[in-house]
Image (cartoon, rainbow, N blue to C red; front, side):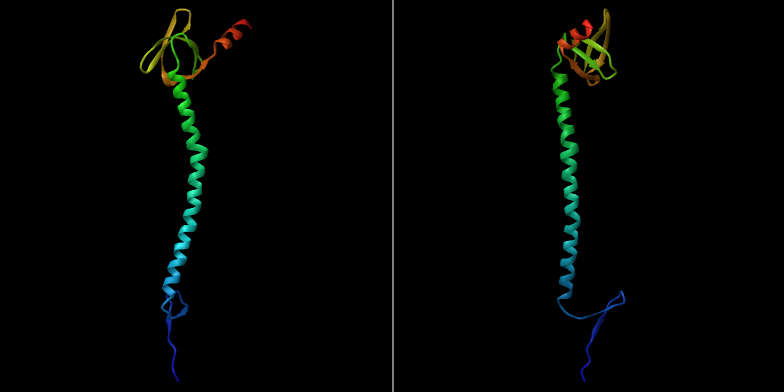
Length: 125
């Protein structure tokens, strides 16, 4: 009688010794790796389109608004002060917040630019 040989698996099982078993294991491992990378790639795309891209758009709008401020414009600071720009410098503005009261603020401290019609409407009420 002929005896058959089986290879002993270190995990406790036994597997027949065939030449193609190693290639199948490598293909299964490759599929598992792709299965893990696909959700990660989807997560990165969602993160980019919902967080990074809108933030860059807001930063660009803020920079354009600050660059468009000129002498005589009315602005609102982050702290809530209303003022009229009296002087534009490289990194700051000199604004007048009351008659004869002038302060220097950084350009990054400007929250927004007020429209001329808004100031007149609020002054009338």
